Image 1 (cartoon, one colour):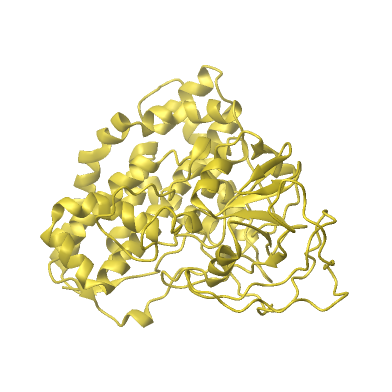
Image 2 (cartoon, helix red, strand yellow):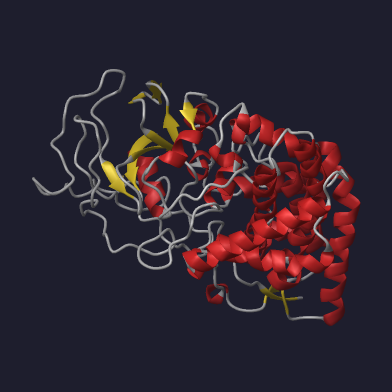
Length: 478
């Protein structure tokens, strides 16, 4: 679970109308509505032409003179390489499969630092897409997450709803204090303590599928229940409570369910963890609830912060289901990759990293940062108070860092991908996610010889309105 992704989970999804999941009616070459920003030296606002990464499209149509939200090109700003780039409206379409967002690809072709307007909020924001610049932004203390909560910045979802303990909205030292409360559960030793239990849980699920025989839905039978069981083990959630926790998580993460229903699910899960923490008060333990209850007792965090942290960590487990669903889909539709993993077990660890790099696992971008002072990123002058987004997906396709960035190279090394983020907000659950993914990889490759899709790939459906993209089901036979 990356902090950035977790912070987005605290936003209320749109119930109706334009939102992060719904394709917009704005076509390439039209003016971005309401894209006016505070700077006097900006160019006109348009939508970029879409295309695959690495291709070049003709320049987008310029907006008509005098169109709302546009200005004439102005002089360059000191500290930049030229005039300000135009503001581009990014509708963030609800994409199926593992297609790379064509609108993001177009923005990448325009330059490493561009300007965007998203479906909700006011004004525009910077978008940083080059690998080096993404790492710079995410590690720069002059760019604040805390300032975002009080800003009506342009964004994917209609509202920000941060809760106490939402580390994605915090800066050091509070961010550090909150992460420290649960850090022991996510160290190498803490995660390794789960390995054998996780393997046993996975083996039981796979045994059940093999016993029942084909066909089977890989998502329903393995990819969904396994990460849920593992994160619940890590959290200390009793087995009888896990179905309810899973339902709440699904509702919170899907904009297709509507803001009101998602909000009720969030409140129900917060109430559940509040009760669980009260029951465990003072008991300690190595699971997350035990660590949080001890931190509250010691005065390191508040009870409300403990509830917020528990919610975010629990929700983060859902990302593994969708990410591994995408990985399984790739292996099922690329038998050459599956065959190599069977022939060469030694390549599996690097293959996990390569698929983490290559898969466009989310729609759009996560939480932005606000500049607390003037600074320069990628040759562009960022002024105090301006919003900055980074795209980890774009950084993971940077041709300056990754040879053949659009290809899947299973033995790629080195592979400095940023799928788990970078800097202080690097995913606290990265080691756990990697453990789960490696175990799932081995189970799919070794225990299902001859496994293939049971339906044509074109008939598969992807989760509508999901923050983390993934297939709703993967019918397989073997």
